[in-house]
Image 1 (cartoon, rainbow, N blue to C red):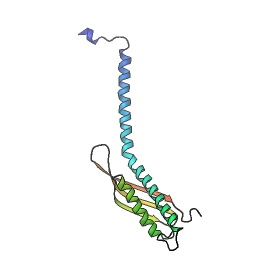
Image 2 (tube, rainbow, N blue to C red; image 1 turned 90 degrees about the vertical axis):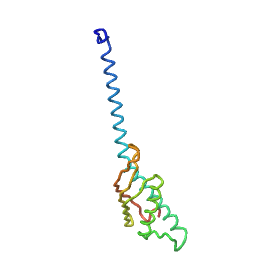
Image 3 (cartoon, one colour; image 1 turned 45 degrees about the vertical axis):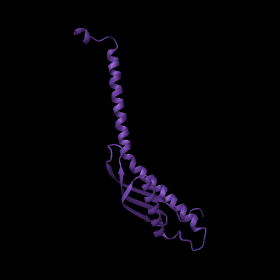
Image 4 (spheres, one colour; image 1 turned 180 degrees about the horizontal axis):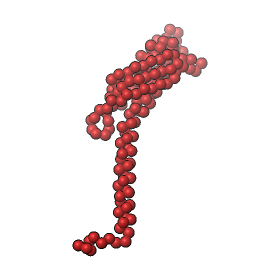
Length: 144
């Protein structure tokens, strides 16, 4: 029995290296999990910014093409409605459903707040409520 317990030279270093590798792999796993759980809000805000850009493009391209166009740049309510539609369409493509959404546009500043249900990647089919707030700018005289 004493022959089994006797260590050879360098065994302590090998054991230390194995313990450090285990600790490092656990740290990487924890960091990955934290990134997964916090990235939904950033992703939704990015989708919101993309929706603002798409809506702005639709308004700017349609407003300059014909007189009496359906999209008048000065109509803030129509902008809010179109932005809401674009945002819901973008999130639906990523299987994210909105439970509440508030869009306000004052002619220069766009503010979107709401709550969405996101299916989390970790833990199977769990769902998570994510509250988000996006503030951006869109000036109706953009490009002039």
